[in-house]
Length: 80
Image 1 (cartoon, helix red, strand yellow):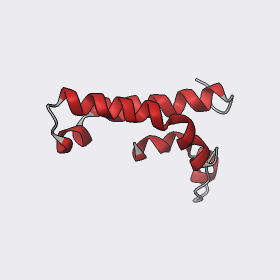
Image 2 (cartoon, rainbow, N blue to C red):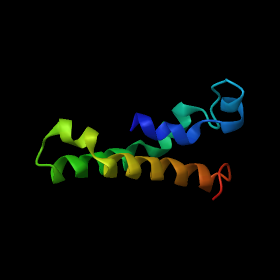
Image 3 (tube, rainbow, N blue to C red):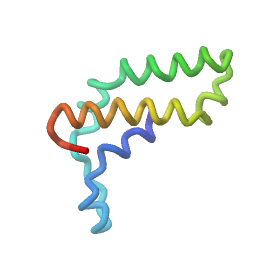
């Protein structure tokens, strides 16, 4: 879930050696936590309750990243 916050990094600032968020991470987390938790929970069930396996699954990361990008897109902050 934490890695999904890469979608919230201001890429222009990053190229200048700075770390800036597009949206306050706390606000973004409040809007996305339920969906990301559901996705990670499903991955946990799919992997028969092995937490270490969930962290290694690309599907868990991609799902959380997609949730983050969708929230930013709905706010008009990122586009395809």
